[in-house]
Amino acid sequence: MMRRALAINARKQTVDKQWTTPATVDGWDTESSIADMPIKNAIVLDNFFPDPGRVRLRNGHTEHASGMDAAVESLIDYASGSTTKLLAASGTEIHDVSSSGAVGAALQSGLTNARFQHVNMGSAAGSQVALLFNGADGPLSYNGSAISSASITGPGSPENLISACVFKRRVFMVEENSLKFWYLAVEAITGAASDFDLAPVMGEGGYLMAIGSWSRDGGDGPDDVIAFISSRGQIAIYAGDDPGDAAAWGLIGVFKVGAPVGRRCMIKIGADLIIITRDGFIPMSQFLMSSRSDPNRALSRRIAKAVSDATRLYGSNFGWQPAYHPAGNMGIFNVPISATAAHQYVVNPLHGAWCRFTGLNARCWAVYNDQLFFGGNGGKVYQADNGTDDNDLTIQAEVQQAYSYFRAPGSIKIWNLCRPLLRSTGALPISIGMDVDFGDSGALSTQAYDAGGASVWDTAEWGTAAWGGSDQIQKVWRSVGRIGHAGSFRMAVNMKGASMDWSATDWVYQLGAQV
Image (cartoon, rainbow, N blue to C red):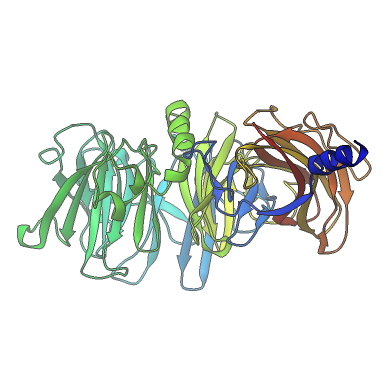
């Protein structure tokens, strides 16, 4: 009897299993079913940026310029030869914010609003200007030192010109609340403008929202076309260089997408033109090859639900704007969630992985001297992707990884130990936990963790630990104590003064009965 009991007990013993799960390098995913999401994807990925081989804490932001009277709603970059400038429009004024610190006297005052769109254009005489349009004050011209009125005639009310695009050495301009666009002579920055009415080809009505150029051959050449997008989501695409000459101007087609969101709804990334629409962030090259009903055409298809929810809830707010930051390998889409707060949906163009940034309450964006800047509240301009804190505050980041059945979907597991593989340049206050069987433990704590603190997070009581070191790999086993079929790794950090990244997580667990 004793020998039989020992044999039965031996069969009941379980063997520890080990497995390593990769970090969520494929990014934020609101498209996949939570029960069928790939392990490299994340249910939540806030302020962690996905690189192809790791997930890293985003960089911080620092104050660049201050002293303006209202929120900065436009940033205007200017370049002519070796001269580069950055201007900020705030309230009723425009200031030079090229240098850091408190601003000086305004370059322009008495404005109706600070919501400018701009283009840089060189004239036939060799001068370079930035042309500024806000739909209320008439076009302005900046030459690198001063702002003056841009003498553009033709429109009955030039102050209604609100946006512009440079195409085939011409300035094309949007007239507010009209399907008519205006264009200048070749290499002209002032003078008489001619009009072209798109109403006959845009049968759904509305008004012209924005204009952008698109290259079909990957460069600047004869295959370039110009796209006009209406408030109803119709896009008329033309080829040619002179709308006044039928032999040199032709309609390629009229296409339908979701309605554009905001005046600043277009950005050129490489050869392609990306448009913020109610259908998502749409590359021109993709929607021209598929119908509107095809969801695979959107750059944002992996986060389609998040984009749909955001455009529905916040689509009427001012501040929607895309930005491309080549030095940081980031495509940034500003999402204004209120008059004073914003999130950013951020893509790594190297492999199309998404995340969300919080804590950067941007009203507008610009890249100046290869650095990323945003205009914020309180009359300030900030440099983003810079430093290791959020303007002297901690960077709060969190991730929830996709659920995994740990190679045994039918079996109960007992998760004993977990070891995230982290690298940090300083003290690493971290809170980790685990959800099981698609449960939701609720929002993460946003309290500030210090080097000696502890915090209860999730029902398993995983506290915070201050791991430190100078660019060291941190590998510390933590007790888990969770039971279930599927598990989801969770992590939160509150960092200041150090960088960190996460590459994988090691697990020790046991398999129980199949239930």
